Figure 1 (cartoon, rainbow, N blue to C red):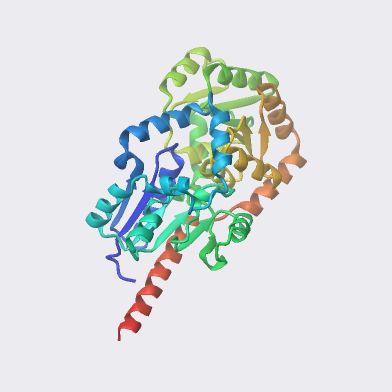
Figure 2: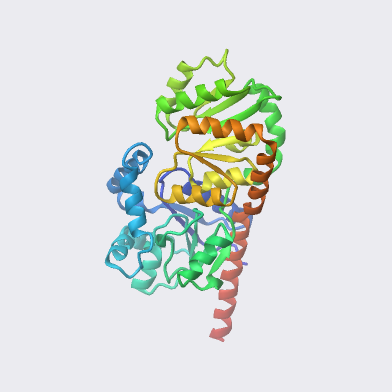
Length: 384
């Protein structure tokens, strides 16, 4: 395989997950000797105002407007790519994408977000650039599929079967898992965990609950943490992400010198914190759930919003690999029951093992490079 292959990865910054997947793919390309990899937030570059507004609406869907978001998601879920609305959606960013293609001249394009501007551009302009899609949810929305997509990489065999029922050739679907940072596939976090127990002043004999709180309101977070600390001999790692206001208020509300709770902002070593946790309380983003599965940490999904996150949550619950709670009282009850029931913990961990996919990014990159090399060999043979 020649090392001067040019790769373009397209994502959209609705949450951190799609960016993390894009970075994981870029790292795997670089590990394979492919250095010319460009990552672009197409929506942000093409339509900056629309991007800011829609990202704000997306964030608010966790507290208000979830009904409308869920309705819109379900109405468009089975929409065919030939409908007027699909064509309209697919047109967003095409003009900017043409400029990017002319400038970058990529040999292949990868989508890590359900936007179809690139396959639509291939259809309209009759461009023969291979387009690969990495699906980052556990269930299907038709915004992920298009006849011009060369290969779909999906997290589960169930999703592959769903896509086949939608008419996608099974040869164009690979079960890969969702790409994660290399740290989530390394055992190094186990050794770092012992070091961090001292840094965070945690007790090795207590069960640790990791709470991802950045998308929930302050009143709810306070109640969850207070009730968990009252329910049993637990300790809490509360991650507020980039929500600085939440971090400051939680830090002021909880006396970390007296209570077994540590309030954190954005963390770069989330894999290590997960490695210390007995369970994680989180939203139902496909990437976050995959990270928990990779480390064998039972996810307790709190109040999933309607749409892809609700479907992700229901899928994992149906597989026995997660728990859903919709009210704070129920959440605390579920967490307490889980951590006190060794048999249930064993059953959830067994279900997690069945869903876990190792080294998704590496496997995807190897498959893409093999595909590109095979296509180049056929082209060379045909030209002789």
